[in-house]
Image 1: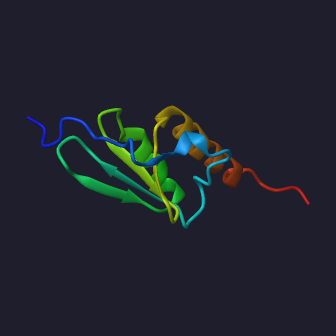
Image 2: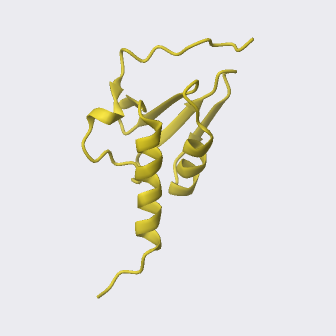
Length: 94
C-alpha cells in the first residue's frame, strides 16, 4: 500500500496558470514525490527532462522558483522542457 494515496495541491498555485512558465531556468527546481514517498529533485535541464519523463499522475510534482507551484499539466511541462532542450541544441546564426 502506498504511503500517500493522493496529494492535495488545492492550496498551491498551478504551473498551467503561468504564461511561459520558466521551466528551463536554473533557478527553477522541480521536486517529485512519488506515491511511496520517495523524493527527487531536478535543477539542470537534463535532470528536469528525466524527472518529468518518469513522473505520473499519481506523483506530486512541484516547481520552486522561488514560489511553489503544483505542476498540474505534466504533458505541457514535458513539451516545454523538451522544446528548451531543442533550442539549446540548435546552433545560433549570427
